[in-house]
Length: 200
Image (cartoon, rainbow, N blue to C red; front, side, top):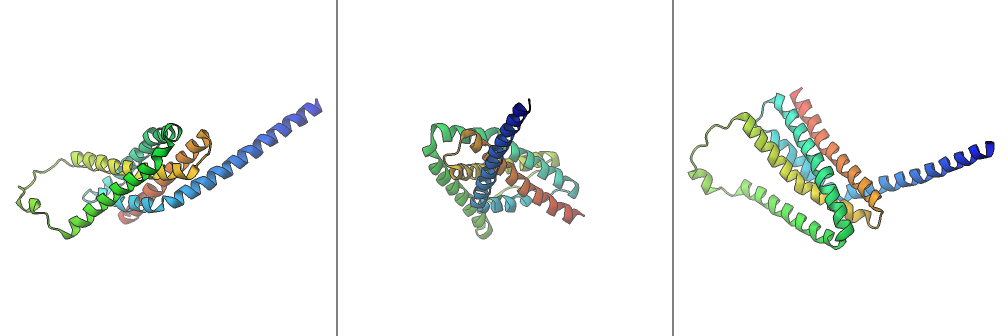
């Protein structure tokens, strides 16, 4: 009886060592991927406050919350399974996707900088816009933010996938989830903190 109990304790200790080693691997891979994604995370954090400009203070935090929820769904429901499928069936596609995502972000950034320096003649000749219902405007802003987040999140997931290399499918899934949710919490948690300080 005693020997059977000792054998059970040995098995539990062995499983604990394996779990600990796996946890260390997850932390190391997640930290490496997050470090490589830092530039995109900064872009994401810089873009977020722009979506609450023009709304009353009591709507700012709920809007950020809805965008954060959409971001989490982007990463966990759409991008994580897609990334795992790509890594399994088309691992060669990860580098081209990184290049395409980077090119798109450069194009989007160029457009934003161009708006600052070049006057748009179509805006001068445009007729005054009709007043838009604040709820409709809020939904439009949230949808636009979630679309932009999808591109940034896809780039983050692709970078993460390129970092995990030859890890097992389960390990890739865990690291993708940890990085995705960690970045979502960091970006939108920081944005919420700043807005709440400004409101307070």
